[in-house]
Length: 166
Image (cartoon, rainbow, N blue to C red; front, side, top):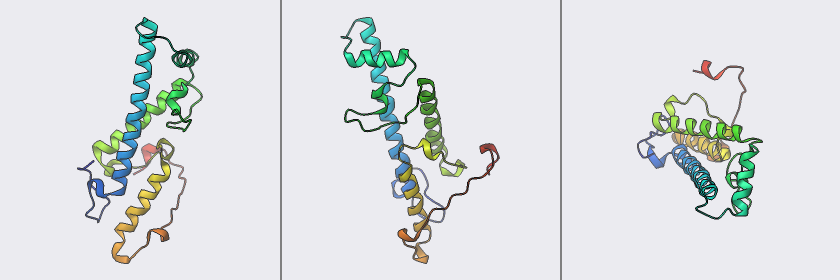
């Protein structure tokens, strides 16, 4: 993250750029989800082998996996707060996981210059992305004395395929 450039026409780079901070936070959340899934699957495998006790929680997670459903532990924390995306089946959830990992790693490895578009619903905090964009636009127009509260977002849905975006 510290090597990533910031927005054009600003000296910001690394953690001084709002979208770089956002990317860092998204990567942390994704790594947390991966750690939860990995730990849960290891616990289930050990319970099946008989090296640990098969608790009711592990049995529920095993049942969900058997039925191709996403275990609740992967989508919600102990308080019930949502920590990942909700999908009706396990295959769709894992596709979402790999697609999110690909998007974030592409951004991290190649900087924002390679990013033609962003998958807003692929972020765990899409509002943070939009706020970071507004902050960077405000910083780019610092000499024009733009205020963050005066910057608005405008969205146009284009009838173009991702491959055709320049």
